[in-house]
Length: 294
Length: 336
Image (tube, rainbow over the protein chains, first blue to last red):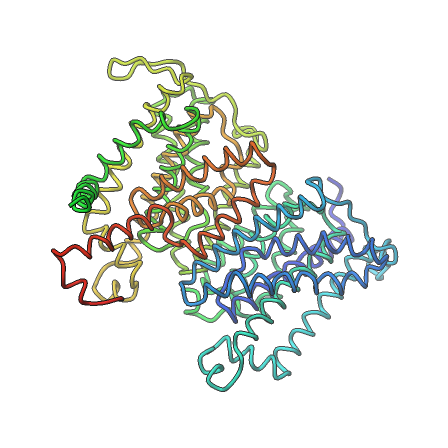
């Protein structure tokens, strides 16, 4: 291992924040779906994986990364909406475990269908040509793609925040996650909102798959570990908080990349240990309300 | 009159459930295409029974039970490979280690409830996975632990050679019988009533004065212990320990087996394990896409048969039993 220079640490910090941005997006999607539908989407990692595959597919089809960034989440979100309408919806009111188990089964089907369509080896992923190389930020050179990834995530999170806090639809989401009964009584078609929120959550998972593809190996199993990691982020941040998802996502990303630099043997373990510590000290998560979780 | 005979039989089975299950398991290898599959079903049936104690009877959906199966397997395997311990001692080490890990994970996980419990157990289970994955010099890392072999030995005057699948089946059945007796005893005890009360209404159980947190830890550890025993036996069965036995997908298999057979029933987990592994055996010989098939079957069961195969049969028997003339009160009460 080379010497620990400030430049190296800064570089690793950017890598960590970029990784954390993906975690934050995943956790935001999970949290959005859970907050509204009280469904833990165990297929979230699989939707992420499908997003990565379709992202590369649409990128080669259209020749544009930007177009793929728009088309892929729309397609993944549409698949998510189909799943909500025909698989998850019949289970509402039948106990909280059933939707969870159903999405676990769904993840098997999504994984296998990508194997059938794209093969078991996965797809080679490349950084879009315009975002290759690195830029000098004064304190050192940083890979352009990671910076773009962080920027894109910031834009998405800001957009979501505006949607949830400033629009009528966001008002319904916030009200619905508190008391769907009252929202229904007020004349809102709650079933339609559930459908849209599930679609939105899975679309964000798909988007994070497109964004993450150039930074990692794209294969049908890539979502399996990601699911566990996004659970860690959700538990650390506290469920149902957009802020918690973002802060915990970045924290987990930075912890992971710093331990990979300093003690690579413990990189995978470190984030789970972080979660265990949070559970011991603050079981409701950093930003969660007490009583929601326990 | 024929129906009464069936009910009398079912009554007898229900009252002597351990004997009934063991009688079935004694002849079970004859029904299977080959013995190794029967051994597999026996071991995974036990794994699902242990899981069912927590999920089916206490209502806590853990996604971390692979940790206990895997720790049982690895510690038994490592005791034999590295420490050259006697097989019985190796099993004891594996089971004790699984119970200890169960205590640690349970202690953290029961701070959360419902859906969070599932997420937290999954994540804590992955700690164990990565720890064993990285400790390559002890565990074999990615390749798994190899060379868990036991030379033929004598037990109660009988010579047991574990390379003979039939001998192996009945050797393992001995341990399964002990575990089933234990589970049946737990369920029949006042403690068994407490965990079912927690499943039905945790707040009310608390209000009734039961120590819910302690009961949860205890049932978690018991469940981990039984899954650990299944793991120990699996190490002897396979003579290797694959690293995948610690992964959360392996925890998911316990969930699937439990649900396919019927959660919260005594024999359901065995039925579920048999269906799962028999289907896997048949389907993988026909197509490579076993994962899609099992995923689809699992989804269909959740949507249409959430009671599982055995659970649905039991419910039907109970319904027809209540239509007997001997219990008119139930009939008058109408549909629930």
